[in-house]
Image (cartoon, rainbow, N blue to C red):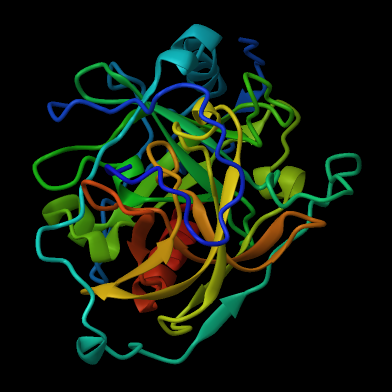
Length: 350
């Protein structure tokens, strides 16, 4: 997550600061054995990319082994001890110089609008009833290791699909961008809360992003999706916690609720939220009012968020902000590119 302001923005929720935000340098608990590979080694090797601007890799351990078996997946879950999770720092991406809004230059949506409906949990006993404005069980915290061996974290959310394995986040939460490579030891903890893992630990089977992010660090395409292994009971993650819906080409001015794990609010240990309208910022990037900072990268911007079931429609994800911050952050405008990445990731899923 970029350098963002801690100033309270209109419509912002709580702002109790527990510990200072942590930054990732420019150079670079309870562990449940409940992650099993959901595919054979052959199934877990998706193509490296396609002609529509998407790229992918098999998820790997920090020492380069592919996550193609239950044993390797469980190694990753075991690697993420409470101590390592607490030590993970947040990525830092600044807004490009000169990226200021100019309403008269706003581009037009690139195609007709589309939607994929949210999906409620289907496994008995895993859904919750109550007000979930501040917390969604379909939103969680991501942990991964960098090529230099560092420990890092982001936010993410499940997304509804036919194969029920997808987790959506920012591209910079799966890949370093231009000149870099993929992250390793990638795991997702739905509704993580102060060390608690109420829905277990889920390890990635593969990671995907837009080629424009991987090759050029294009913030317009700072989008990432992970295909997740099943858990120790053979369950798929969307069946357990539900999946957010998805929308694309819905215009630049919509109302959203953003959820994530910012270090400046709750020390990155608790989900927080912002609510705001969005507007065109620069290139294919939208902006909203929010004072969440480091750690909220990859968290969903949700249209029509339902605070009784924790589900809505992902319309963007937290990408970057300015330095010094002013209570705003940016996300990629979800146009045909996100639908292409979504279809691509789903096609690689077992």
